[in-house]
Length: 221
Image (cartoon, rainbow, N blue to C red; front, side, top):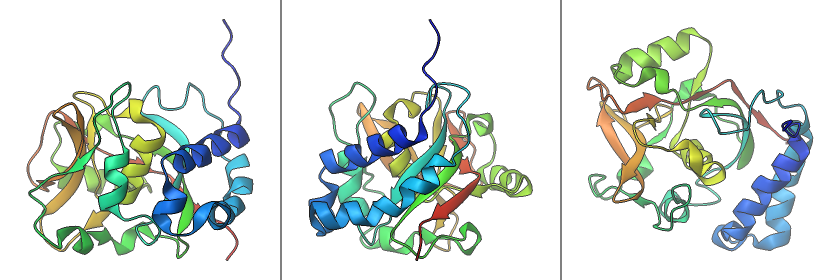
């Protein structure tokens, strides 16, 4: 059976519906109309997304993600809105994040994060090729390729829109968010649910890769 051609407009609309169905308009305090207005300018950007060569998410790669920042939707509220593919248990933030820690894990200067509260992340890879690699080394390799590391919000967006990407032995670190020490946040599976935790930048794990993307695209200012 021939695969249905990838339709970026339809995919963008699906991602908007996903966030709406998960209660992001109420969570953000914007309400349905203002939330829709926030993300609407990105639809045109989505139409120019690279053509997907396979079913988006099937191999840990997706052409684009609709991301909203913690200014709109706090991490403590968005993580519990994630689940594993086919699962029911809500995602959670690991208790090893001490009080106030999440606020200190911010986007690094190298990410070039857009100023807007919503944007597109393009050409995303979960990075299982880096499973077993030292995170610090993986981040250097990715930088050498001219790619950008995912932030915490972007990682949550990835498993929110494509829960099938987070699977056993193919979990991933989010090196685009740091707090000034050796900790690197990561998403993996625990207690049959997604977990946001962290690992040391010098400690490799066979089941933990390093997620990256090609670039970010914002709508009109």
